[in-house]
Length: 274
View 1 (tube, rainbow, N blue to C red):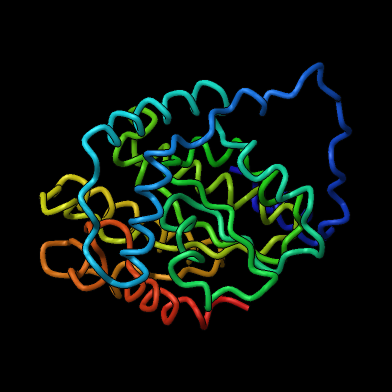
View 2: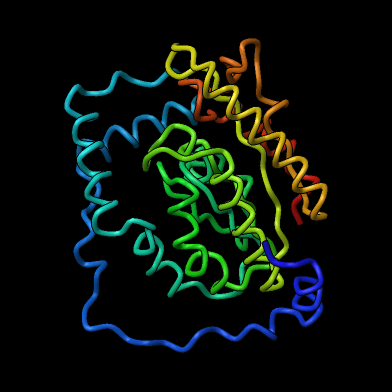
């Protein structure tokens, strides 16, 4: 962790003190090898978004969709582990400086699709479904720092707990989140951290071990934010039901909020965001 005295000096110097690194150039474009989302996954994804927007249960997934999704995710990790290609063109075309970058995984990615009214023009989304904090660090410069936002909203860690890119200890997850927060602050970007949403159940099955991990990481987030003077949005208590899962009327699968769930999140977040 960066010494407090060093951090204070850099923050006092402001974002202008941190010049962007010089470009190196490349022999080729690695993004051309990144596989597109297969049609079967895209179609089912659109169906689930529609269900979440209407606060309905998920439709039944085609049997071959899960197999296709796993293969696609493996290919994405092999060709673009951090996901830097995902928003490259959108970042290039971005006009004015964002006010807030929402940075995270599927919960962040789907938010403006399920609840578009919450997002004014200068609040931009840089969520990628399935990502862990290890992947997010790899694209933090491209999708946050280089956009020079006033604030970044970071909501991450549940995919690490689920082992999406391999085993990860809670200390490793916390370290990755702290690193992102420190990088943002070094560049004059205000940090807003969100606690992980309830995850004690998944499609009707209890996951007490994940619920315990979520509780431990959320406890760390609260203590870290208080110690560092970082804004914290405590989503978990607003969404949790008995058994450490998400309230049934707020989610179709126990993990991902529906429109009602995002409305609860928005009420919780509104006072902390500009």
